[in-house]
Image (cartoon, rainbow over all chains, first blue to last red; front, side):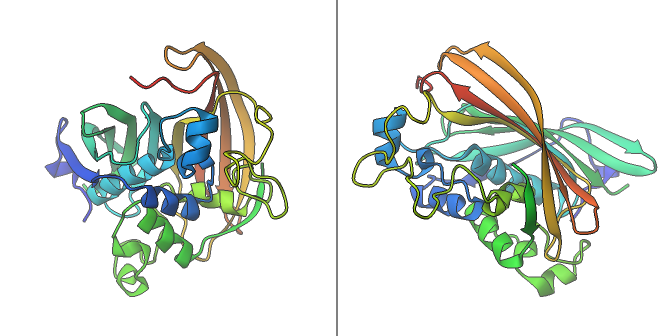
Length: 140
Length: 161
């Protein structure tokens, strides 16, 4: 289901919880699928004793990937034209994340309609872990 | 870091979608995908990150017969300090989609270095940012995805508040 320019207005929001109680196993799954085996994400001994962090933590790209789930659920499959983020805080095992998109603009370019969104993903304490933007093709 | 051959494969897409917690059928069910607007399985928006699997020199993958900096008997398998101080972290990631990759596309990735800059951080000392731009093209030379990543090397671990 794609969005429609007629039905959207600036300020509309869509949010979803994208993970509840993030597990170390999901982080391992992401390491395996993405190929990023940096031990700071999966190896507690290395991370606490050598890297100096209290525990392993999620790949930024896992947080972006989970934010992308909310985004494609909202704009539809194959509709994204841009997706960019900054990682603002680390995400730890046990965190629960909620990702939100807010409509910034609805525009038409060469007969094609687009929506521009701002993105924010927060943890269970309301702290922002990711901020970003996206654009997608929408129906008239 | 250039990648000569990154074949987009349905099984890999399914594993990647599971890892980000996405149950969308478009990522594993060919019959369903065929009935949708896109007409086939497609890659999730951050999937090209998995091109690391096809980079023969990728630093963050253990190599057969070579020391690995993660733990075994000891917390690290390399002499401490040999990896430089601080930690490399991902600071920003930006994608532009010209067409979403799908099984059957065989991508190449070409990487151009971007800017480098420094900033004094509040929680991790001096921060050195490095940008790189990657273009993913398929076997027909069609540009599918442009990626701009920014990495940061911290002087010390990020302080936790």
